[in-house]
Length: 432
Image 1 (cartoon, rainbow, N blue to C red):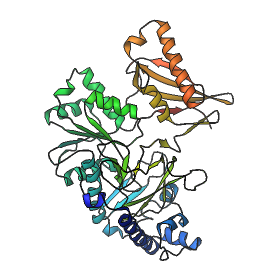
Image 2: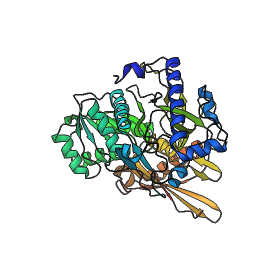
Image 3: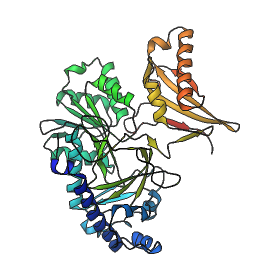
């Protein structure tokens, strides 16, 4: 199902010409109205009016989260504050918050792009959409809210938290589409199981999940437990919020809204483009943002591009689901490890529950990793021999696929903390 078929199925040559024209317009905008970019271009002797091809994008400077923080709050806005109709912000839990602004036209584009994501996942005007993302300065709730209204769906803006009330609303209001983080979807499913609620009696058909990396194993678990089609979507506050990319019902990668965003995949160490199909860091340039355009923003998110055409007919390139973030990567005994790799292995082992936590400690000069794994009750209270066999199996699989040895500790069901927002999978106790 398409929302804007003429744009989503545009021939590549036409799309690239549109991208170039929009890039030229964006460069003029930031060079004229944003002192930060004007200074950067001058330092690098870049003529923003001289761009004649998309390949020249690589000559432009990167923008980082530190740049956004250093220009807090309005230093990177490209229009006067009187033209900004909405301000959103990050939580600022790891430093000064990043602040983004939207013009009236930005809000219109944002609504259309999130409508694309919703329609691609199967949501239409007859659906009842329950948004369990937090509202407020976080972009997730409002972004998908406006997209759902744009396609004519009924929206329940319940926000995050209060799990049992979420379930009651889902039953009473006949929710057909759920929007939240994948970890919260699992919490909802487990709570329904505890409440002896018949999943098949619900009207739920679709789940659109984002806000954190999640594996194919977690998708299968959610789809089975909630009896839905679960799709991934991607966005980030610094660029726009949700609506940058989303899966169609084929679920074979996230379609990037390339008429609004230029995407590059770079090696986070060398900052050079990776080879086609290789994994690297996502770098995004906005093409239509008026209030807060960004040039070559380093997202720190890791994925790879999929060049093959999608059976759905959309011509915009796809990317694989996010593997993790460069700043989530753990370097253990010289080996790069991502929590998503551990999750994928655990979901493939019978008897483990979809809840885990990774504890990283330092003993002497060596790093020690312990993976806490919830297991089904029958195993936890079974013979010690069976527990040892499961621990050995998990350790063997992790060592084989990660290339390092880790400790594994089995814990009872529901003993690890549950999260209503983004799950915290890693507790790093090292003093580095």
